[in-house]
Image 1 (cartoon, rainbow, N blue to C red):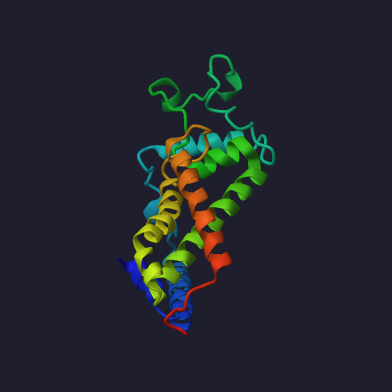
Image 2: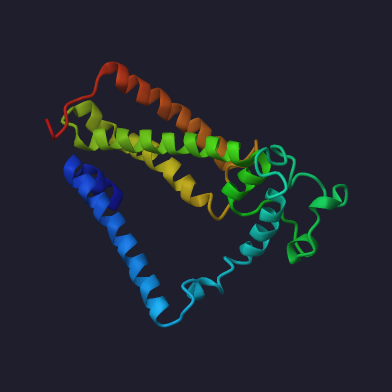
Length: 213
């Protein structure tokens, strides 16, 4: 509901709100760093104990492997899918290699970095942000339009606009996008192909009148 409310506001107010939020976060960061400096505190102290249910152990191991091939990666599907008994160089002495069957880093961006390298990661983020931008712009048009057809499209555009953003957030703690047969990745592709088709149709047909007009 908050996202829908923000998308309804006028363009100038929308940009002002975004700038205010960004500047507030930067100011809070500066104040925290200044406070830590005055009191000889570690700025990262409050979060150093967090392991995100032991995910940080896996992330550390994967980053060690990433640094061996940072540009081209290990190859899509050629990292976790190889048995460590067959590929000893990928074997870790950490808990997840001996006590649990782990086949992902539980962070899709780290997994993409490991498998397709820096170039592949940037390419994936470009496509994902493009989908998020298109989806939210379509939803904003529908929310602010006086056209009855566009008003009827608000529920559909809400799904198209927010699902890529939800996957973007989900992919920080789970690997939603790094495998060819990943369920969330497949659903994202299907939904966003529909999103691209709908976005192109709106551009061809022309943009309906909005509250600014």
